[in-house]
Length: 161
Image 1 (cartoon, rainbow, N blue to C red):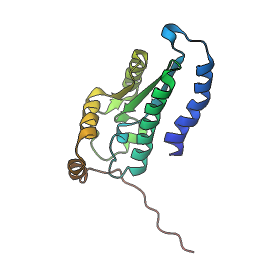
Image 2: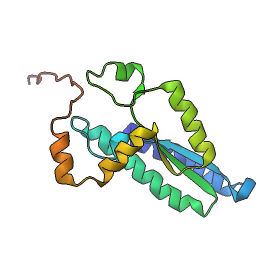
Image 3: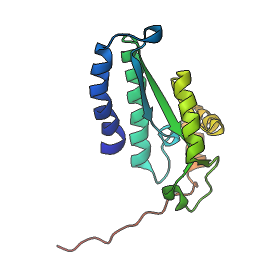
Image 4: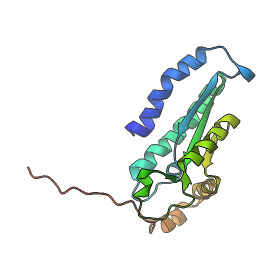
């Protein structure tokens, strides 16, 4: 939560005040704030409770800020990546649908920002999956996700007194 949610909030805070105070530019706009969430924020993923919760909080924070800052002419864009090929995802022992190279993701994100989209999942096929997960009844999601693969976690043995 400190990194994913509080980090976004505290990073945006000084920019919002400065952007609100500046003169409007083209089309009455004062700027754009972009936050990175994750598809993991759409539904709670097994084995990723803290991550899913923090990214869900980012989605809701950015949604609220988008509404609050609209009157100031400030755009707020939420980008929710799916799986991006990085050294961290290279360690995942499970299939990652629609795995995207980081440079491809970056180019697509720039286009989303330039277009002024409010919310976008990248890549788009993962967006279809996210939309379906979002509206899926809980009982069905629970049944389907119960057997999903999990990222292995290192568990340290309890320390003695």
